Length: 465
Ligand SMILES: [Zn+2]
Image (cartoon, rainbow, N blue to C red; front, side, top):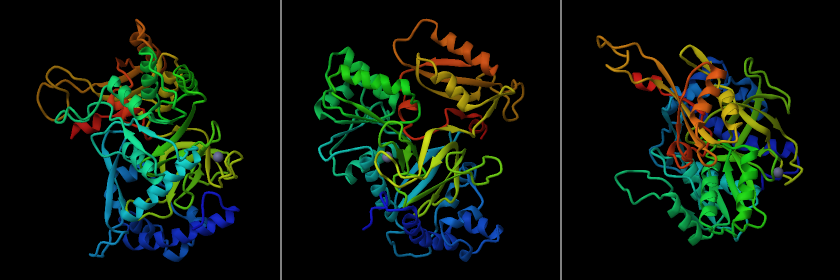
């Protein structure tokens, strides 16, 4: 079995990729509802796509295409006998910017690949045989990969893992789920060497341990997701863990997605986000407007192609983020795979709120650029008004008015006037007066994300149904 993460040269990788991709393409041309239709309209036949070199002939698929009809992205098999390629192992969900969730199906065949890619993520991040993982992602209402794949990654690397289950996932079973102090008890009991979760929540946990004079000397790695992450956060976490007795703690950041069921990861700080399974995923960068391929190192729309999937399958899929890609061997770990250099930015998802445009990346830069803010989630919704809002045909209803609500987890003690100060800053830049709600990193809306979501969610369409 070849180790496709460390091949000799790019040609060897292309050969490996094309072998896997050929079978995937056979299935797509025969059984993929969305692409069968798209490829027919584009007048492309199976023989026109010989391998990854021909990808540029295919049109770009957008996240909106997927969210509009996610079931059309699942291969439909005619075989009645369940093979590993057709039996559904699990279904995870991703939330769109309007809060609607879309299913992402994995077959048994895919699950084996998921184990392999999660194992590679751990290898790249420097996991060792004697590590112990603490999973700090909470259970979410809909099955989500951040919690589940952390458990699976440990299995693929044969490491012990403890799920701390923060928060209260379900009022029906209040005993399932734990507050911060109970999670801290679990930390002491399980003595993890790796803390894996959302950065603002891990920071809150570290701060609480410090308050209670609890030492965590075994911790050597923090696996943090990119959402809500800043370099200041990295420095903070390292300083905090040092105070708790950790010798040389490192923070490894990841860029994850439901569409990967895993994450692109750093091997060392600043080495870029590595594609952990170049035999499963192919990345490209194109001009956001013309979709023309760009050179390595140029910033553009990131595209993901599944080379070896059987459940939900996507070709040239744009999540809406822009970033810079390089394809040279990593000078730090020696992996030969795509790496995203710098932090990808949200490109899509600009929303009109009360007639003003709000760019989620600009909002994120503004809020996370402040020391007082650890994390946030903004929501656009209809304002509650007496008599109801003007949706539907009821008489006497007032016209609907938009409201921008921002849930903010502060990075330390809540300062007097923080809400007002943040509201004024947002209003000065975007000309929309927001409602600021101070919460904590334990807020399920923040702690449950794990993988990339838009910092600006639109719940208006949702309500209209
Ligand atoms: Zn590397």
